[in-house]
Image (cartoon, rainbow, N blue to C red; front, side, top):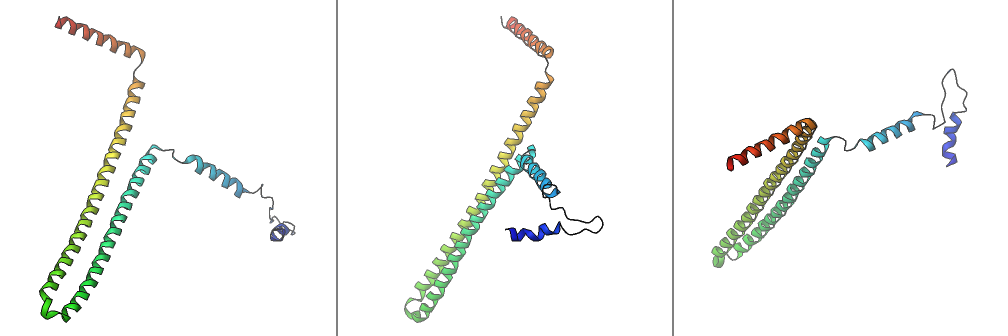
Length: 189
């Protein structure tokens, strides 16, 4: 380790021409100070703004939706692979059809159609499932965002209402309500 630092330490002993020189005291230089200040700012600056929470929520929801889409795409890829396998089987069946054309041509055609129809239905079902999943996740994300916004608005309104009420206004409201109840009691009696 000493061999690696020797060239750097010897730079400090070179005779300087004019005002040029190397400062080998690592504590007196600014890179450490700047990195400490940036580290503290980054560490304590996380999660300060309220909109960051909403952004994080939306980002998490977006990641879930993207993961669902990715899963659906993987299922679609599996279905395409099944389709390719079905096509390979179809080619095999067609070769066999050339051999047995006289006896079983109609049976082979029926199998071919059934294979294509079942694969098409499977692909269609997977596509429908993917679209339903995307729609469901979007609706769930929208509802969750609406609920969060409503909660924040309600908290803001309660905070404003509580800051506007003072003791005098509070007592006037209570006495007015008592008077209204007394009037209502007289009317019902």
